[in-house]
Image 1 (tube, helix red, strand yellow):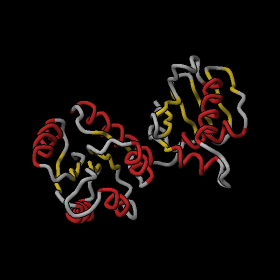
Image 2 (tube, rainbow, N blue to C red; image 1 turned 90 degrees about the horizontal axis):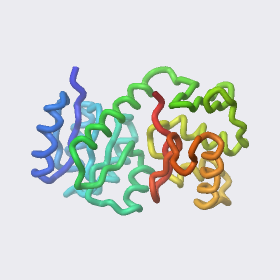
Image 3 (cartoon, one colour; image 1 turned 90 degrees about the vertical axis):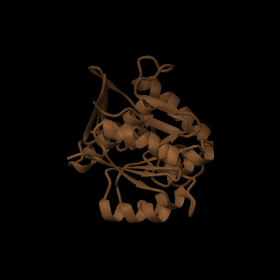
Length: 228
């Protein structure tokens, strides 16, 4: 069965651009032009992926995202001309799986959709306690990390950072969420998080200045590449 993509955008030109591109690549397409109709379509049709614009005529797309996340775990990719750092952080904090700024290329969008569907499929299965990507292996059950055949020695905080990212592998995790998870009592800063990421890279990356596993999304957060 074809995966169903819900396009939420009030611009006819965008919908005319997206629909044929998605249909030509094997997706079924549903359209909504307002926040209200988007929520109604999501309830009735249960799309596999939602492409959500933030500038809707009846309400802010962030409010639509918040409502969706109250009951739906379907991947949401924000597709918006609002490319400010604050918008990206707000979208990720509200539960978006990804954020794509207009204008964008079809191939990039398709790649983001494929990645979102893979993550959703993996999340629907029983959780896999072992993460593997390239030469990096992380066993959350045994609390051990290997780079190639050599076990990496990490501090408890470095391990906690990797564990937090493994649980959301392939997704961008905002600085705010990581600070809250790693320092639940507060008292830390984005600078402390950057230092922790720097230290952890030196433990798990062959070339820390060109990381293959632990990636930075500038001004937004960090991402551990999706497992292979």
